[in-house]
Image (cartoon, rainbow, N blue to C red; front, top):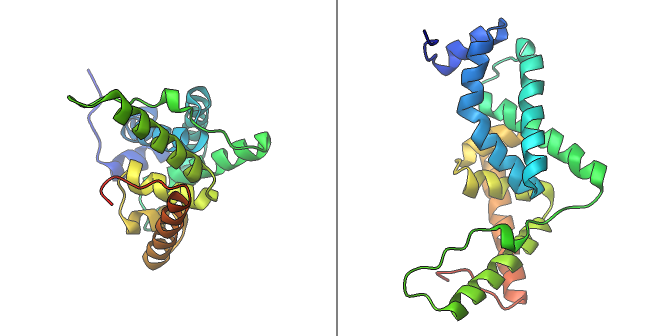
Length: 190
């Protein structure tokens, strides 16, 4: 007989009392999102898998001390992930890039090879520019565009007000636009 599916609050309450099945349900809800966040920050599949496992191991070890302070449980997980990724970068003292060959680029019907090559080069340049941003700006872009989070949700994760997130987002997009223009690139649709 399988365990019932718990609402997040109930799963948290049970997990904080040592219920591993309830923690497993929390893991199932958030593992993919945390993995995506870590992968985009590290650019390495194996390190992302390892760090994601460490995020949930740390969360399981400290779930008894988790306190709901008005932010969603996912904010706590992202904070753990952020700290582990920061330590990972510090230990390596260099940032890694995702090789453009690792990104799936599927040609659209009727696309010409030349157009695909240009798009690939533009994506490579954009990734380099994003990877050169400060970590908090990379976090913002990942949470906004990869995870699809609202400014309020991002603010809870980053420990900033919604207005501060909007401001950082605006400054980040302006900086990206300026750097793209410096390299004579443009984003599609501009």
